[in-house]
Length: 276
Image (cartoon, rainbow, N blue to C red; front, side):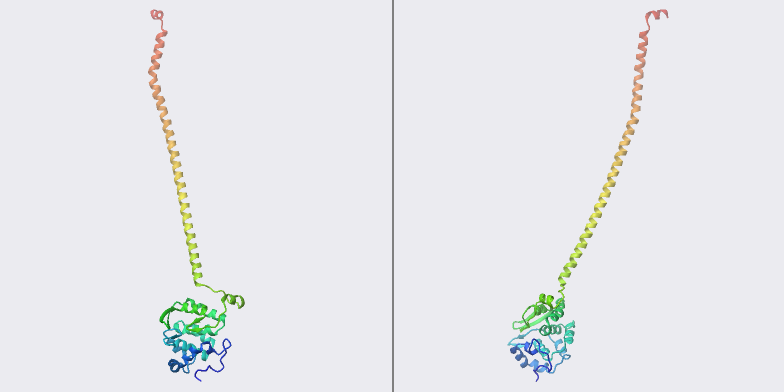
């Protein structure tokens, strides 16, 4: 009676929910001490305390011994809690192993559309998870574990039910397209780069306009200076020309008087001198 599925449980994928775990592993879980001592008479409420105490995830280890994680998963399949309770398990951010347990159960029992809608937001959870397997302890992350649930056929030594591809669900079931956080970050960085490029272009254009205005001002000043310089040269030339003419007139007066005296002396005849 302790290993039978709860009365009134709904069949999943056309079979008993506990049959989703392979018979060999299921038998080993029923024979384990953890199942007999800690999983007896557990309910959806008391199972939370056991899930909080988990220290790792995994299937079987050592001499094909089942882990506590896989034992609690089988207990969930046995009692089959309501969907709202499993969603609440999934939304608890404080206890990561409880979230991993709920994600595993949702992947095995929920409809494909609900699986993508509930598990894809967990790809943003980057917390570490310890994994116990036949090779010992290893380390993984929550987003990697969820990605394995969505893409791989076997996780934690359990064969997962077939999952319809996302592209098919988008066309047939109306599943919303996946929003990638990486794509959003790239678009945001691209918009920031475009804004910075525009700002740089605006600054360079303002600098070029300033340089053009300064060159125009300097060119106008040089033209003004050249014009003033040419005007001053013309003034100087006009002021010098009278002095030169005056000096020439002054210098030519003695020669002119001498010429006049000579002409006068030549005009005086000897007869006129005798008459005088």
